[in-house]
Length: 269
Length: 157
Image (tube, rainbow over all chains, first blue to last red; front, side, top):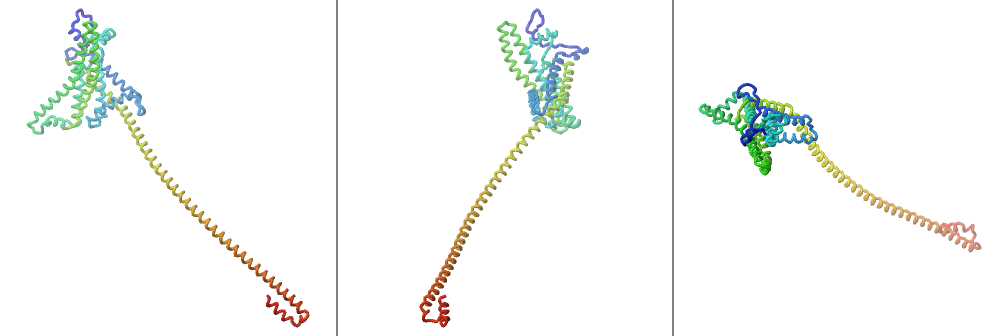
């Protein structure tokens, strides 16, 4: 903890929820959450690097345990994608789903790390005061992912149906071709296009952020003495175990939604 | 909840990771998995083929065995027939031979009997002649009665 003279719950929570920021340029937009970026990139490198190292030596013969693990994961994801996407999924969609799942899962999993211990390690070993270790509790991360998927969605819509086809879809679905309905269709599609990335990103953010807050609240039991600390630790352990489910489930949901959105872009109505 | 430049950087990182996976992670593993699937499928097919061939072979073997048994029993049957024929023939030959020997023996006996009779007759004739000679010596001139004696001798023959 910081060397605050008077430590209030608000300060405790605020401290844990403050980003390490870097100003790239002047202006509010040009702030960079260095902790989010660095943590997520490190996690991505670890996840993708691990898979890549295993895959590089992949043998069609009897697989090693590590290869079997990676294959299990990839086949699980490949199966999910196969059920949703009816094109050549190996070109883009399936590897993208794999990336999302591994990366989001790793980022979410940081939520389970004991908050105060990691904070202590980061402060005392790396000398950084503010460092949020869960990148998915930063809306920038979830919006970045969701918007990337959103652009991919539009890209594939145009690529598969052509610009005219996409425009036709925007104006003529879901209610019909009648010119009177064009505005209504466009409005409807507009809402859909706005709500997709919003719900996509905020679902992940909300779940993980709420989980983090609950860990912080449980962590405050430590302020009430030894009994409180033990009580808080037990509750924290229970929540962490439950959180394993949430973390995996949210990563899976995020991946599935991305696959569904991209699949929908491939199919004409 | 402030949106800022982090979003752009995260999007870039995300895109890079997607590109990396699409390019370097997915294809080799997919290749390995597909190759293994093919190997397994081939192995299963080969196993199935082997089983089928085994079935055929055992079918063939039992067919051959049946045929061999049939042939063997045929051979035995023929042999038995032949044997009984041979025995039959031997019996017949023996019988014929026996009969022939008997016939020969009878003929010989007859011949002997005939010879003996002849000799006996000759002997009797000469005895009778000798007796008659002795009787007639005194009263019959041999030269006068020679042709009578000859006719008697002829009768006795």
